[in-house]
Length: 199
Image (cartoon, rainbow, N blue to C red; front, side):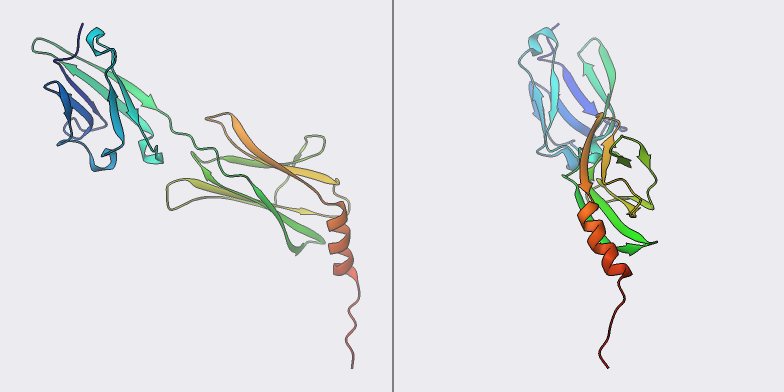
């Protein structure tokens, strides 16, 4: 049935705190939660058939979670619960060599802008998992996460390694590879060379 003359309310945990409210034939913003102000739009193209959609722009991590849609007419009401899952695919990764450690060189992979917390891992050329020396997944000020994972490569290490960070929610990942042969030789030769100081 047509919902043109119904009250349509989208909310989270509290009925009175609206994500979006439509009543008396128009959008109402007086009860809208401040964090949704200017970010929502009720799509009414099919409202005469009782179908409406809510569009939320500029998605944030805090938009993740449960929403309730409430329809009310003069004689009846219905509601439905929806689960919104926010996901963020992080930035292009950066791999850097950061000095010596345990007879090898320390290689660090960094990527930011993930949501929810991602998974990170190092692999060799054959796809075998390599143990990381440190792994840090930490929150950023905007609610997203950044990943930093390090590995120590020695002369015995495979010549090419890759690191990937993935979000299971999207089943997507960012991957970057580094060929360490020349860099490793140069770094290790500096590390093992005797140092001469003029008297």
